Structures are given as C-alpha cells and as structure tokens.
Length: 113
Image 1 (tube, one colour):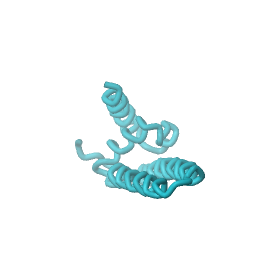
Image 2 (cartoon, rainbow, N blue to C red):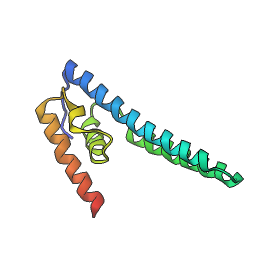
Image 3 (cartoon, helix red, strand yellow):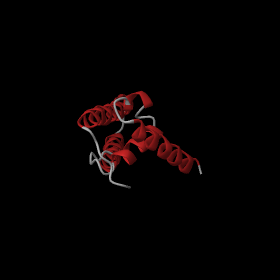
Image 4 (tube, helix red, strand yellow):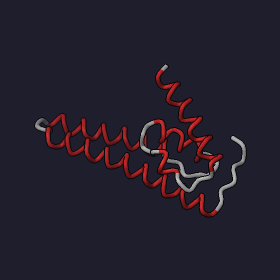
C-alpha cells in the first residue's frame, strides 16, 4: 500500500476507531465465554473453554495491528466483520474512508466466495 500520511487529528480518530472495534470484539468474546461457563457441567468443558480462549487470543493478536502502514487494511477488515461502523471512522479524511470502504467490500466479497 502506498505511503499514507496521517494528520494529528486523524491519528486521534484512528485510535478511537481502533479501540472501539477492539472493545466490541472483546465484549463479544466475554459474552460467549460467560455463556460457555454457564453451560459448563463436565470436566471437558474446561478444555473447550481454554481452546476457545486460545483461538480468540490468536485471532485478536493477528488482527489488531496498530501500525499506520497497515491501518487502512485493518480498518477494512474490521468494517467488513462489523466490528467497526462507518460512523466510527469519523475524523478520518474522506480519501481514507473511501479506501477503507472499497477494501471492505473486496474483503466481504472474498469471504462470500
């Protein structure tokens, strides 16, 4: 991806959007975890919970990369996965929002294939 310049205000908006998506996804993990725990009645459920958390940790670590050089791609993925809404991108330049939306459509289309 071409070198993208981020203004100070865009960096602040990007951080808010990134943190919002991260919190939404972590909240979803917590909700699923609570559900799993509430249904746990057998010893093997402990290890299923462990495996779920291990998988989610790897997913989160792979996905949430706050480097400006890849942030457009990260935001496109988060938008396509519904962890971000277009309104969360408020404060970014229109050029960046358009790139994010265009890439998000490609990601969504690729997932549907």
